[in-house]
Image 1 (cartoon, rainbow, N blue to C red):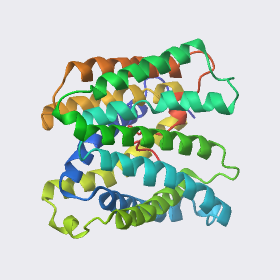
Image 2 (image 1 turned 180 degrees about the horizontal axis):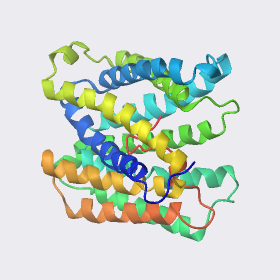
Image 3 (image 1 turned 90 degrees about the horizontal axis):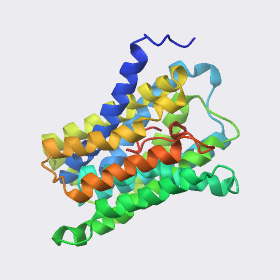
Amino acid sequence: MKPTQSSFVPWLALFTIYVVWGSTYLAIRIVVHDMPPFAAAAVRFLLAGTLMALAATHFDRAHGWPDRRQWLDYGLVGLLLLAVGNGLVMWAERTVPSGIAALVVATVPLWLTLMEGLLSRGASWSARAWVGIVIGLVGVALVAEPGGADFAAQWPGILALQVAALSWCAGSLYVKRVPKKLPLVSASAVQMLVGGVALVFESLLKGEDWSRLAAAAPAAWGGLLYLVVAGSLIGFTAFAYCLTVMPASVVGTYAYVNPVVAVALGWLILDEPLTRGVLWGGALIVIAVVLATTGGRSPQPAAAPKPAEPEAA
């Protein structure tokens, strides 16, 4: 039974998503300062996936063990969302400030609108959605702000973030079309474990030095622990709970709030600069997401994970 409007718990859970998922970009930036990005991401999701699997043995016991097809389907989702999507976010934030990373990833709902329109042969497109997409791309261009010494170092990361956003969209669309669904906890466990194993191979192919994990500063380990507990476990639980008791359109507002939180925290804690490009571009991206994901027949933003770490599984 859905709670009354005066119920406090759902709104507390939604506020948790706002803050926690918005803050994961800051945590990632701190982690990759000392740790290899793919190795750190692998440790994060293997730990979180193991904890989710233990929880699934209790909460999803009646549904039994996932079959081969479910492992393949949800494993592919884990590859797209976590091994590619989250892995590239971790890699990009070595050079891209956390606030800019969050703003670029905030374009996920725009790409979802575009991709769903392609799959439905334009049925989900509207003039409002197209205006939102164009405004969002202008916002990304302003956030990237070509010029200056930093741009040469940042543009590969900006490109990687867009690839991450597209991969996140592909995984989000695929998981909605999985024929044999798993319960949320079991599905998250499979995605995290498969994504974590894939990230181990990515790290080895990249030639990352795993000894840097042991030598990392306490702040980096604290950031990694925060990503495991707050980002992957608490954030996911709050997200799943909100979807069961609140309208999807309300839950989907996290896509507008997360980048604002990320930019503010990056400025306050890491002294990341608030340039005119970041401010104006960020405002355009938020406006674009609102336009593209509300009204008409456009898909609801809550149908897709965050990204903003991208964080939901």
